[in-house]
Length: 490
Ligand code: NOJ
Image (tube, rainbow, N blue to C red; front, side, top):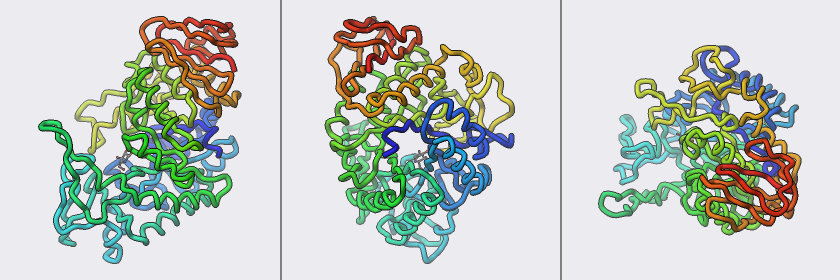
């Protein structure tokens, strides 16, 4: 169960590292940054979709599940990346988009595969996640096809055994090449109600909204993951299945673990979307601890390519808050996922209206190029943000947030309790979030504007967010300044 000990690092491939200088990231670029990732101390990288795609939704509209987009390189480049990463002890996880294909995928125009998609004579009331009806009339077929996202992303019909077999084959294709697992796009939504019933509306008057109960989170989706987990277990080491599970209820989310025979890591979006607030986030963490199966393992993240980066959303760019957030993410029991740049405190970038490239939403601001240095070496497909926080300068500065993240990762790696120890909340003053990991390790983070005291501690500070108190004896009472955190004992 290597993923339990791992820190994952999400790479938005188009924006990470550009080896040939053509303005967008690529696989050789990622390969050239393996030294950096090894130095940082992460264990696995998750690459956003690398497959051929017309890019209506920047790679999430796949036109060939077995290929590599020419913008990113070739299958040989991927093999080389997996081999080089493996030599450094780093695993490579890919993104799988099984809910839909691109409308340019050959399946969509193949009459024999018509039943691989979802069709209706008349649309029901389902709306697309990106707005408007989820149905578009196909001129040639004369019927409506379903798209829970863009019209260029027709939904597959997961009741069809041919679709299931095709994707199981795809899993094996990549697992055989050494891919360590998949992050599964909209994992909760593959199966649609067999009768395509209208969704109910909930809420009152102006807050009335569609309750997406028939096009998402159907009970039959679990059968798909039981089959996939069986395949993941055929490999050594076992392959990991990470779900993009937008499921608001923790009790419901808990079902995605199955009887330890479905997803190993269904993502916990209630945590990601909560404020950086001790009471609010602690309640979600405790809820997950209580409601998830006993042998289940959580996964935590603060940023990704669809939402506003946490250093902006949670922390308003404040360095002390960013370090506290990193200590929360990396100090909880579970697998953390860092989004590229989180380690620097990289912020959301304001993209002017006329430069926006994301036709679906305005998500570009979370997808800007990785700031490797103070000056950008060339123009990229999307503008850079402020380059003050950049790898080159922050790596040279032992007091930087990057150095802090690295030291936290180092501590995690060195301390089995911080990696695997049980989580126990410790009662404290408002705004203070303190928890124990295992028997001897305590993480205390003051998410408030007032000083707070942590009582009853044993041992010394092993790492503090200001990087100035390491080694200080914390036995008895530890005073934490506003937005200061520390790992103690262990
Ligand atoms: C979730 C992905 O993260 C997002 O970027 C994409 O637009 C939708 N799924 C549709 O694939």
